[in-house]
Length: 309
Ligand code: ASP
Image 1: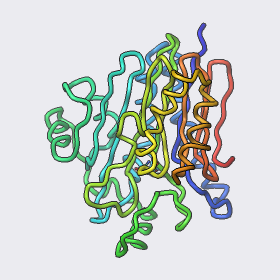
Image 2: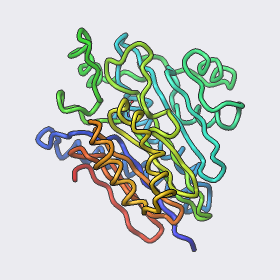
Image 3: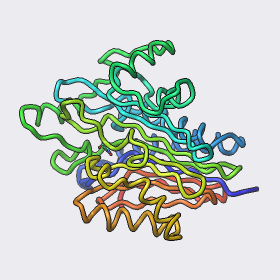
Image 4: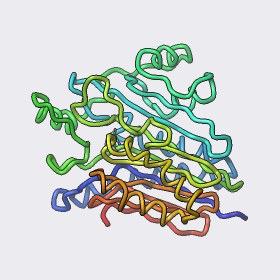
């Protein structure tokens, strides 16, 4: 049987070790494992990488521990605006949504954009109209409310600051979520979902829903999901840059991912990380922060669940 594999992340960031209790760490690992297992089961059944990444991201969106779906950070106007994207490496089909509210699983709406519309990227009001046409039910604000996130926002709401959910300042430790997978047919896919950055305003959109920046998949090279300071990841066109290094410079998945995260994005001041797979089932998970919530599993029996370096 061909090797298959999955990797997931729950955000990169400078995690303050002292703040992490054993119990909390166990909770994170528990939710990471639940997402990993859900995605892996799909691959194990012989189903598509695309299904595996959607299912894994949904589990992370449903967890209040991560900044996506339930548990999304607060914007400057005390609301939640979520972004998500998904891409199929076999067909290069992609779907993305941005600035959406009330949707329990933004990744599924992104997939619907890919499969049920003629478009790739729907934003704001229009994306919400599309969701309505597909009979999505809307959750009320209480579903997305999280006390910790609200506190994070209260601390900076009267400033011009906006911050990474897991940035050092407030010892916040949660982030954007994503999954990449390689299935038994050697098809790969990537999905990413986020609440963005605390106190963001003016319809700020990060890298997560941008195909090529925060998310990308192409069977020829790799499937990538990023996490980090979105402004830099957009300017670095990070996900596609990894694919380019593989395609045009013949670099391995590991070398290309590290070149981008530990060199190129650092050079312009960006912090964060990414998860990556190629069509042979290889996995890379580099980050230039102190930690990144991450987990991976392959059909050869390797399994990892880690937070720190
Ligand atoms: N990349 C995300 C954004 O800029 C944030 C994150 O990774 O947590 O919206």
